[in-house]
Amino acid sequence: MRRYYLIVCEGGKTEPNYFEGLKRDLPKGVLTYYRIEVQGTGFNTLTLVDEALRLQNLHQQQTGRLVDRLWIVFDRDSFPPEDFNSAIRRCNGMNPTVGCAWSNEAFELWYLLHFHYYNNPVMRTDFKALIEENLRPLAGTSYEYRKNHPDMYSLLKRYGSRENAIRHARQLHALYSRRQDYANHNPCTTVYMLVEELFELDEESVRK
Image 1 (tube, rainbow, N blue to C red):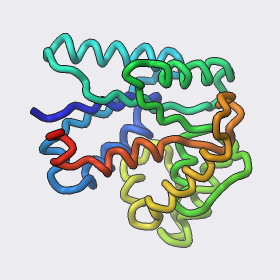
Image 2 (cartoon, helix red, strand yellow; image 1 turned 60 degrees about the vertical axis):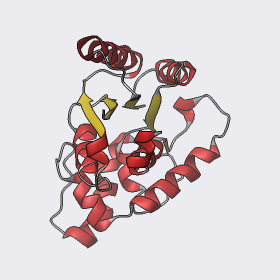
Image 3 (cartoon, rainbow, N blue to C red; image 1 turned 120 degrees about the horizontal axis):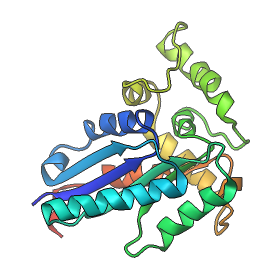
């Protein structure tokens, strides 16, 4: 039996489009042994955690099989700090722990880290210009970032570096080690943890 990954995203298109592109790029054979389902919801912070748990329970009731790994993907955006902090703490406190790929302020920070290390606060209004600044010298001067573009994963793979993004994100995350005021961790993203985990999947790990 294939193991089941459920990735529940705040955004309806941006994050699901990225992870659907990533799925197609996973090592040969991974999708034979793992079912990886990505769902966009339109929910946020604490309501997203509730919806993810509902979707997990629904799947288990309908199939009689456990969800082997649940991940939740969401942003800080402009939501109240305590809502954001509480959602992360709730995920971390569950048993088994629910994977929490959060970004402060937005998922687009993960895109930027494919090109450079950013350690100064980045506002949501800055991401479009910064992404275009990085991609236009590579993809052409007419490039314009569209938030829900279905080919963003492909663009990042072609012109950026996933390895650099992981390294940069890990560096940022380490700056806030042991602090739980997540709403103040700007810039920071833990998307790298989910991406790393997916690319480490293989036939041997499903047999364990």
